[in-house]
Each structure stands twice: as C-alpha cells, then as structure tokens.
Length: 360
Image (cartoon, rainbow, N blue to C red):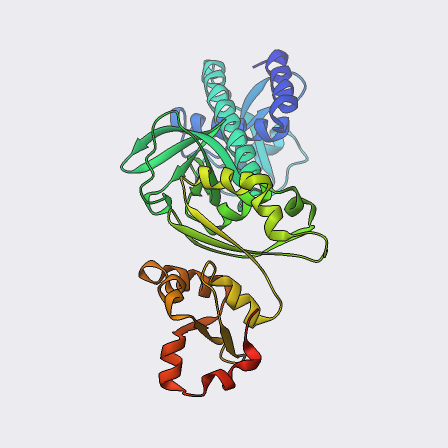
C-alpha cells in the first residue's frame, strides 16, 4: 500500500461518503485477522497503516512482567529496559514483526475490505432513502416472479410484492410498470428489503393525493378510507371552504381524476362520499348509492340503525354485505340496516319515533 492507495480512499470518501479513517481501521482489523491466521494466532499483535505514507506494519505487543510465563505475550523487565530504560512493569512493548510477503496479503485484504464497505455504504444509502418513504407510493417495473412473489425493480434496488398484498384477479408480467404502496423497509445483512402492497388502503389514499391538487394543497381533506381491494372502495372527503365541492374535486372534470385511479386499480369501484361532522348524515351518506330514509344514533355504543325503503334494502347491504361492511369501516360505526316494512313490523309507530332523524 502507498500514497496512491490513500488517495484512492480519499476519492472514495468524496464519492461514496465513506470516511477514510473508518476504511483504514477496517483494513487494519482485517489485516490483523489475516496475520494471525497465517503467522501466529496466539500472538498479541497490532497492525498499523501510516496515514501519510500508506506503509503497513505489524507489531507484536508484549506486556512487561517480572517473570515471563509466555514469551509470545510477555517480556521481562530487564529485556524491556535493554530496549528502552523507561519501561516499567505492566507497560506494553511493541516490536515490529512485519513478514516479508505481508505486502501481497495486505493488498488483497485491503481490496476485499474496501469492496465490502462500499457495498455496505450503498446498501445503507438505499435503506435510508426508502426507510423515509414508508407509507408512500413507488412506481417500478416487474422484474421477475418467484414462488408467487413479484419482484419489482426500483432503480438500484427491488421491492417484494407478496401474494397476500396482490390484488385478486390481477396478473403481473415481466416488464409491466406498476404502482405500489411501501408497507415496510427492513434492514438485513443482504441489504434493505422493501415490502410493497397493492391492497393497502394507503395506496388508494396516495393515488388520490397524486391526482387531486386540492388534496395536495390541503383545500380538501381525505378523512377516511375503506377498501376491499380489487372489488370496491369508499373514501370520505371534506372541505372547510364552502366554495369547494370535495366530492367534485376528487371526481374531476368528466370523472377523469377518479377514472385514472380506477384504471390503475384495474376497474376497482370507488364511492366518493362527503364527510359530515353529524354522525347520522355521515352514516347515511356512507351507504351510497343506497337512499336512506332515517338514521338513529347511539353515541356511546357507536351504533347506528339505518332505515331504507324496501326496494333499497339489497342495495344498501350490497353483494354479500359488502356495501354495509365498507360503510361500517369508513365511519367506524356499527351499522344496523332495516327496511321500512321491517321497522313497521317491529314498531308500528316508527315514523313518529324517527321523524326528527329523517335525512334529506
């Protein structure tokens, strides 16, 4: 090793951000292991690289004692003082023991250490970049599919789309460009592992934020999301500005904004609902497209009884209860849906009971 090697390390520091001192300390530690492996595993040794010249030397370290029991790690006081009269008991004497062919081993070891540290630094940079993006959307290209896991190329690294995070009925082909939601970034010995999802409700939220400028600007708020990936979703939006229609902003001119998101999600149906601070109005809206006659609220239990016309009952409940289930997720209320005829059987005078709860 020489001054050219030190200059190369300084160039690496500028390019990769790896400290020269950190690299040299790592090389010294690796050289010490190499020396012990090849020349004397029981010897107490030290490797030092001169920071100015790049010269590499090995020193045997022996402790000054009165009676020597192991000459590999101990030296007598008399022998030490013959070298330097200032030595005392328990001092450490360093003697150069650099082997003749150590330069070749040093060069080879240094190369391995530098390459390894560069890899580690690059992995750390990638990890830091993506660790800060958990909960964000990435766009990547499908690289390969192994054991139903889809690997998506994201520039210098790749993300894993597990089977449980894939949308039902969606097929992936090599070269497809897709958007996914970063669920988790793990730091492993083989580099960062990025796990993404196509089913997470956060994907829907982020897609709307990308498409709707009013959401980015904070004029419109996305209050809640309920999603059954690949089938149907509901989002609740709100605006403090009376002049802004939050639902219209999300739908976009001629439905273009919401249609872009529907296309990205392969035809997943999306209901956009206006959020309301009044729970009864919000619950009624959440069952869209069904029309609601009245809503009764139990605040403490977070339970709502919703009355719908007879012909709207199946629409309110939805196929296999999907509409009611999504409405409950969206509002965070337990919703009990009854038709008018069911209510008339239970309470003959129900119209008088709920006259104040009628929803316009």
